[in-house]
Amino acid sequence: MGTMRWVILRPVCMIAFAVIMSACATSSSPIGGSATTPSTADATPLSSSRPSASGAETPGPSPSPTSSPTSPADALEDVPTAEGALNAILFADGTVVAGGFTGATLKSRILVFHDGSWSVADVPDAPGQVTGIAQLGDRLIAVGNGLPDIRTGFIWDSADGRAWREVQIIENAALYDVIASNRVAVAVGALLDAEMNATAAAWYSTDGATWKQAKVAASAKTAMGSATTTQEGFVAIGDRPLGVARPFWTATSATTWAALKNDLGEQLLPIDIVQWGDRLAMVGASGKSGDQHPFVAVSADGRLWDQTNLSTDEGYSSAVAVANERLVVAGVDADRLTLWTLRDGDWRAESYEQSGASISALTWDDTWGLVAVGSRDGLQAVWSFGNQ
Image 1 (cartoon, rainbow, N blue to C red):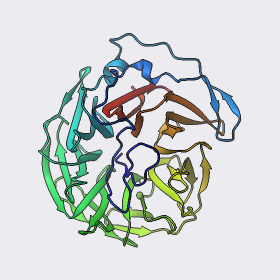
Image 2 (image 1 turned 90 degrees about the vertical axis):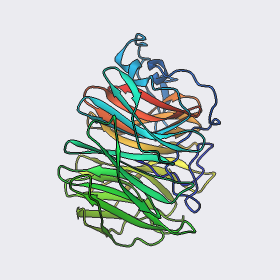
Image 3 (image 1 turned 30 degrees about the vertical axis):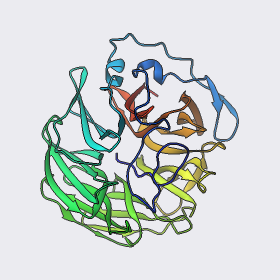
Image 4 (image 1 turned 120 degrees about the vertical axis):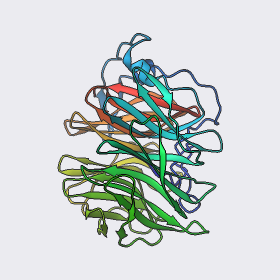
């Protein structure tokens, strides 16, 4: 999944919505700073007990033993050293594909994990970043944008993840996410004018090569930032200036999106969304800049939401996934890289790194378990958390 980052939520780079609509998940340390090589040890909780969302202390698991240097988890975390961040990850037919950007000036990049090691994919020479990756049939699809320098969205496709071709350029636009059902792929984002005013927009394709623009209701002054497939079709969330009702869209067909009235608070910054059984789970930050907190909200219909702030400290939730039918949220809690897991109706938190790390995308694979991508000390990073 690709993510939007609008507001300065701590030192982590979450670019202001009114200025730029870019999926930026760089760390709180300067780009190019030193970093240790990722290892399984980095995914070991810092402490065995952390406050729950209700404030009560809940026991955590004992620290996991560190795997040997040649373990599969170590190999998965051993990404090529490069400044930048990874925004999206996909497991496809035994191959892992991760997309993001590299360099201080943001150049789009895709990495491929196959036969126990990572390699850099052959991609079109494009500024900006890859923000989403999906699989449609036997094709892989990647989307992204040229922000902050160029108002251009792009769509690529690939047969194996190792070599990509450009299939469509969308001028004066930015793409933030792409999802796919069995027969259709959907890319979401925004059309942008010269002043960076956004109009929510979506595109769809049945073959990955030919894309058409969908009809999106209530699209003015907002963007579609994160989307997911559902039992009925598709849903998407977006953002607009604080103090205005949060946008939410549904679609039974990829061609037409309807706006859905909801009770989401006006002081919410929605970042990621996932289907969880017969419900939806959304994460992000609640409150104004300087007083924001990680939150998760759950809904059965997209209209009424049950919201929980995961911490009283300042921070944000940046990604959500379903692992072994449990809901898992990644984010930053008072600078600490943190995972919150819903167990027996209680949110339990485990911190993994004290500072300088941010997760942009979180996913579950039956073989690998819970895996995340993002940045650590300004460098591209992958975390393997195993079974949750």
